Image 1 (cartoon, rainbow, N blue to C red):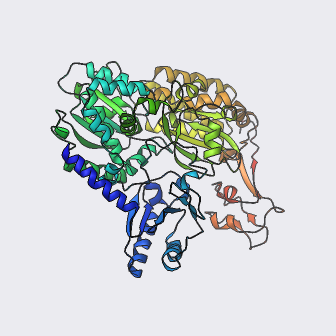
Image 2 (cartoon, rainbow, N blue to C red):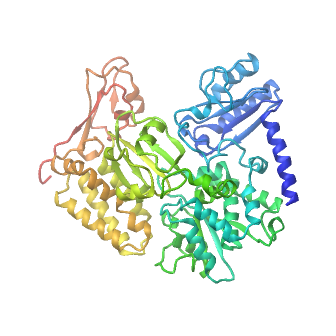
Image 3 (cartoon, helix red, strand yellow):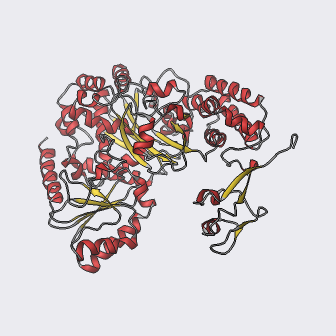
Length: 623
């Protein structure tokens, strides 16, 4: 205990010194979203500027703080002043930004987002009063974008591992009671009460128990787990230690897809730091608790997000699900009792233990307690990683946080490929496990994809079914064969070759798959089709009866033309057309050669003057 206390005292002193540094401190968002937006080049420009001007400053690489659409984010903290954040910073902007601070002694005005001071700061709003952030409640994300994820002292200085210390002074049953009273449910999708699964595992007689952190995040458009690990890996590891102590596990695994190299790098660094602090191995913090963690890199199979397939993969077998019971909590990894928890579930635990069950349960609804992270993506003004109390309405998330859609809200896909497509009538639906389930969708791990009026529902359903069909492990016939037939029917409809009877055929087949598939992924695969048919049947009928795609997306049912009296000759479409099908001089109406058009839709999307029309192609009966 004394060693960790001394380390924390040193960490707090260093952290306070950083906040009140006599040297400038530069923070750069270096999560995957920031790096994809050009943060690596920005860091190079920052370091080059500081070296050229011979300025002594600290440059910290932090994780994603949330508003990914503003990346790369660069924060400047001058001595005696608060940390001030700037958005969409490029290597070219760095010189102008830093000249303002270092040469002129002025706060740079362009690209300004806000400051991080608790008090006001002249000329700049507070960062967390930004429209995307002000309605959020950051619990599991509290450190993301704030600390250096590879510096354990930053985590320790912000109460890191205090939850673990508290646990080790308590019987495991008391820890379980706190988790029970908090109302925490598994954040991986099913929403099963965390404590109940733990209790089954703990009470199953065995000489060995295992704990697995499921970081195999495979939903298209989902990045909550990756961002948490990249921005605050120690929160997840502390959660694993707390969970392992409670269930009596001596060995843990982080199962993470190899496509997450930055998250893996930061996990490895954090685990090495834990070993140095004596927080892994035998007799942790002088207790009788022994625990160690290994990383298992998965090959990216979507099915390995299913717990029994994940277990098979760790055991060195092909990742395929098995029938249950027995459930993994009774007989899992190598036949031993095993708990599999999602990254967010584990990352939330230290906050619950440290602050208490009542504190956590004040957020959320009666049956869905706490907060939930979501990747808010799609046709929105503001996209990124968010954390909100469960029970917030779809409308609040889409409009208050996401800023709404430029071209009009049409629907939101919740729960990824296993979820459902919900239209405008569900805007006032609370986002919790029960309400989404009643609407025919699911919470899932937290993907929220917003669709606008230029999105085709048939095409969207086909996209998700293509994904689940390609990712099917093939073990059971309903999933392996059924999803292929669903895709075939959807393809016919999108080509204008469908029949009205196909709609009943889709429903029968989807319900057969739902009732007969072996695992949860197969059972939920038809959800996008079932909800789309239920709430957007008219759009399917347009494709079938009118041979028309209302959103002008399905290539076989649309051709594009330029409306001459609307075209300003701005040449945006000329520059983006990959085949050179659009020609014309600047400031004059352009021409579109349909013989060269591949219907990629790029011109339609980029035109600011609605000068590109997507017209229905008339398909004769029997064609």
